[in-house]
Image 1: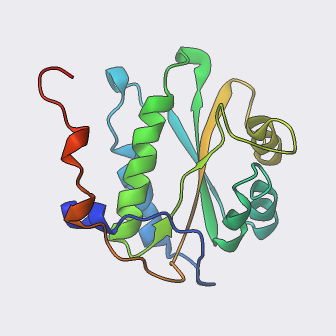
Image 2 (image 1 turned 60 degrees about the vertical axis):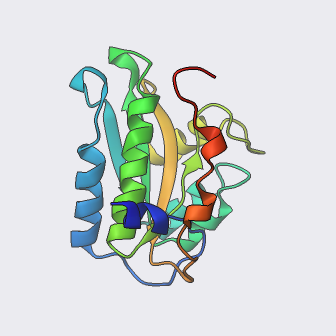
Amino acid sequence: MLEIIRKRRSVRNYLKQEVEKEKLNEILKAAMFAPSARDLRPWEFMVVTDKEAINQLSQATLYSTFAKKAPLVIVIFYDTSAGNRFKEDCAICAENIYLEAVNQGLGTCYIQIAEGAEADKGNPEEFVKSILGIPDNYRVLCLMPIGYPETHQPPHEDKEFDESKIHYERF
């Protein structure tokens, strides 16, 4: 598992190659197997492969333009009718997507859409919801473009392990 984690990098440039349905299904399974508070599994996923829709989604924030280079985008969102504390559960899904994408020889990058995302076209979340027809009672957490990486970055190394960030018992 640590080998996959070491290889996980944010990928912003993709080959013009479609992602096989079998690989996409494995990624979606990994997302659905994420833990959630009280096992409520609040997440929903929208797989977007339509190029025009991907181009529109790439305009959601100031930092999402690279999404248009990907053959598909997974949108992670959740239903607020059962509560409004589910973004953490969905963030765990996003990490599972990252790791399974690497395991499948693919790459991705987390694009924040929820609170704090910077945009020049108004509210990024409302922008995404309007493009995809997501109802008002849902919150959009992020976009995850997925594809075959154009280049490969070296894996993380042990020298990046910073023991000064670890505290035992007390600060």
